[in-house]
Image (cartoon, rainbow, N blue to C red; front, side, top):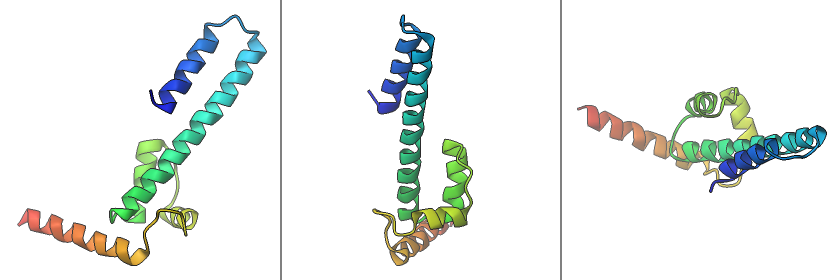
Length: 109
């Protein structure tokens, strides 16, 4: 069971419980924050993965809007991920980007 599914199940259990309303609200707020944190970690991981695959910051920023509802510019994303653990050096990412473009060009011929 994924962390997200587990958290959603916990939220549902609180709704069906006999806990006082304020305690249910407090638990909801905690679990929603936890779920939001999980989504942000997943988004950052996905961004690094896509950049390492040779995608551009513009493409990844647009993807984050689509995949996670995170509105961030490519410049903000570059600043956020500068020196991030797991992010390959720029030269390697650029070579992968060129290889990706070459592969795409060969497929259309």
